[in-house]
Length: 95
Image (spheres, one colour):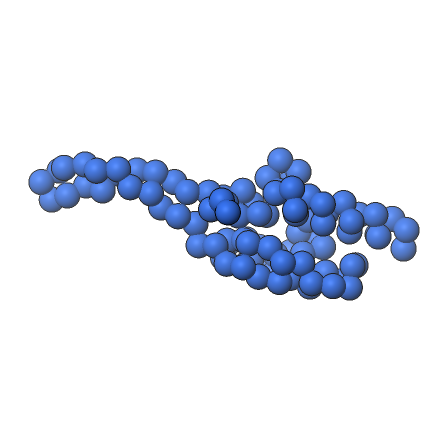
């Protein structure tokens, strides 16, 4: 399982640990990923995703997973999230 947010595409960053003696060693910063179940109002069910804490706040700010996915770019979304986005769009067109 990759360490990448399914909604924002945020992944690990790399850089250096720098000691007091200015020695440099490589290190990684991993995103704060959480396994969450978000409730979709359009689909009437929960959607299980592995997203970052920042993405979870963005989902809440935009008013739920339906509104977030409607505005999200397809390139940033995981295949799973893209499938859910298309399902939601299909339900909203028929309703």
